[in-house]
Length: 240
Ligand code: ZN
Image 1 (tube, rainbow, N blue to C red):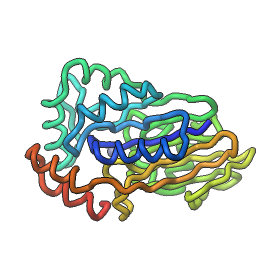
Image 2 (spheres, rainbow, N blue to C red):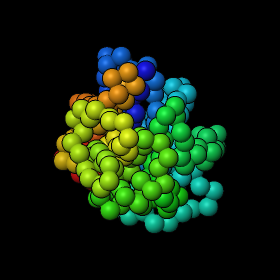
Image 3 (spheres, protein in one colour):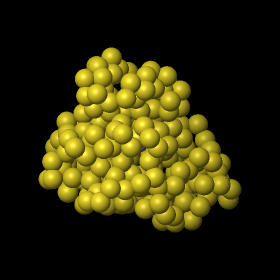
Image 4 (cartoon, rainbow, N blue to C red):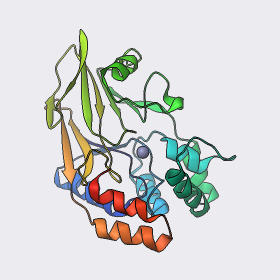
């Protein structure tokens, strides 16, 4: 099996289409969505329709939660908040209830998926370093776990100690635990504007990080047309 594992799409339709088309060329057979389908960019409904059509295992992200809440939440910065209020107005009651019912974590075959962390998935904490990763590892009961949320692809391994590892192509070894951040489809923040996602090949037992170019001008035009803050369009170019 070849799993395409992707998340933090954030309503970027052009990026999602580019990633799915790359996954098809890479002969992926299964799809897994790490959450944050909506928020920030201008095509939440279209992105949601594509994910629902895929019928793939999906976990809830903090933007999915905020966009679908019955009472308004708090804790977002001004830019994210403006976009989430706009998103809330776009989504139908059915779309919101689909988002609301997503689970925070799931097991798919032999691996776990969670948007933020395994220790406190509902608190939306961030795994930025080995220490954060170590806390999550103590709640990880599968050899492999995928996360998102920081929008920066990264791999951690636990074999006695916890360290970070390069993620271009990562061969998985027996007896070790891996925590892999698949990066972001729709708003990368590691300084590389291209969409990120991972392919997990269960035969070769490797995880590969893919970077995919997409029609960024199309995404930016949609942001302007929707009347969303121009900053949201500008940041895509620099990958921040
Ligand atoms: Zn996100």
